[in-house]
Amino acid sequence: MEIKRDQFFLFFKGELSPEQNAEIMAWADESEENYAMLQEERMIFDMVNLASDAEPAAPSVRKLHFSWKAAAIAACFVALLSTGLFLSRTASPKVDIMAETCVTAPSGTRSQVTLPDGTQVWLNSGSTMRYSAFPEGKGKREVILDGQAKFDVAKDADHPFVVHTYLADIEVLGTSFDVIADRERNRFETALFTGKVSITQPGVNGNHYELAPSQKMTLAGSELKLGQIEDYDIYSWVDGLYCFTDKPFSQVLSDMENYFDIKVVCEVDQKEQDARLTGKFRLSDGLDYALRLFQLSTGLQYSYDSNNAVVTITR
Image (cartoon, rainbow, N blue to C red; front, side, top):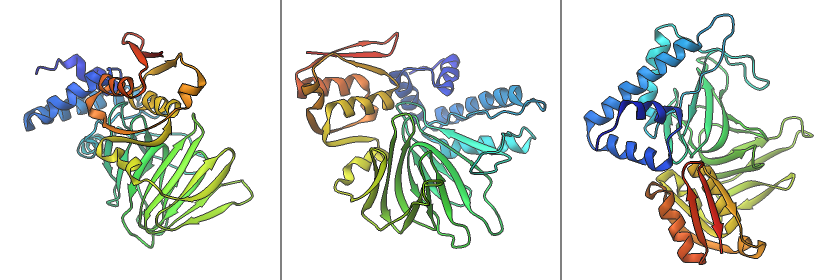
């Protein structure tokens, strides 16, 4: 398989189709030489864009679209900072960050990141996390999340770990948990696997909650509801699996829009949209494979306009 250089540029910008993204990922996995070339192209891409953004009179943030092997490519970004090409931003209402790293998982992929303290983070498709240098003295380790991520937080009693989201802040010392914080779809969930987390809603009457292992806090309407984790399979997205149990077809299609960066037009009645499905598939198998599975299980037809990235579902 041969990959042209202009495809790397489009890949890093997040402008390729899910199928093209999968081709590049498969190519990089073929050999160490291919993967090293991808890293080199990533560094060149970042240097060009960071240099063009570094205007002292008008500082701005440049999003770095990390690939599925973001932990290794992150080293390129550290090297760039050492050359003096620093990013800056206006003060956040929650976190005062002078130099910031922004990691985004392109649609149809997942990104794994190792933070400076050793914390492991897995970002789901289309999700973004921002963070700055962690404190050396007393203080909090803070990240800002938009989307879905799984955290395996390194224990450090002197430096609580805080995940800021659009709805609430999640604070831990060392634990493993999954967070969905999707402002656009008004979705929020924190599921705790090990340890303990506290959830605080700033400015909302000081609402404060604590979770024990196997518990989750989910946004229902305008309120946060405490419940038990009943299906651990749905968190297998970290392993590249999309699992759904007794889930409305309309919600499955909404997840597909997010995973594959497409628009779904559903031209079937509400009863069929509310039909509940159970199943799983590997995201790396691609959009067409997933649509064929749904066609077999529901009897519905689909068409895909690749030029406009629109899937139409019909009877």
